[in-house]
Image (cartoon, rainbow, N blue to C red; front, side, top):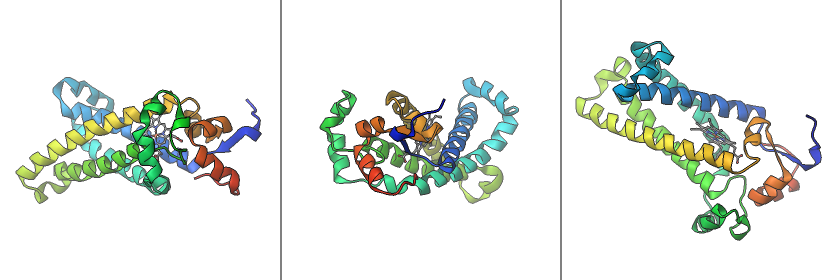
Length: 214
Ligand code: HEM
């Protein structure tokens, strides 16, 4: 359907959206294959990847691709996620945001403090998953680690995965809860009203400059 572009702001380039959705699909495959290896009651999920042996073989490769695509997101978005004093004040007053009264917290830039925290959790957990995963990848690096290191890596890998899955659930829930956010990542644009309500500082910056989304 045609829409009036007067009230519309570009938020994500096609490249950024492609990068994000490739990452999301890889993460879903990673979680499903990882869960099938995590506990016998979830082993049935390995049928999605051609059985237990194939799942064990491809899980680390999907992991590497997911880490690479996350690196792309990191490079694109890190500059918008740097912490400021306003973010600390925003966090202290998060109860107002949850009560849908965002006028009582400092104006948010491209991302608010909650989104920035999610971003940094994703970064740290991704690094932990990568290194613990490499230590558990016996077919490639089994000779480089001791059994004690592998045991520690298994605990770090599972704990990081559980926390990252929870963080992604929060991320998806927030994207749905704040109405008008999802279209930013699907169509690449948001309405002026959405930006005024949730990211007013970003809106002011956008109207002041020649247009170019990240
Ligand atoms: C599959 C379900 C997912 C949905 C529906 C979803 C939705 C979204 C939406 C709507 C945005 C734009 C938010 C805004 O412009 O304010 C966004 C941004 C983002 N998403 Fe997702 N996402 C999903 C999965 C993931 C996964 C699995 C990851 C990585 C582990 C991820 C990482 C990011 C990052 C890094 C950003 C930029 C936000 C920032 O830099 O703070 N997303 N997502």
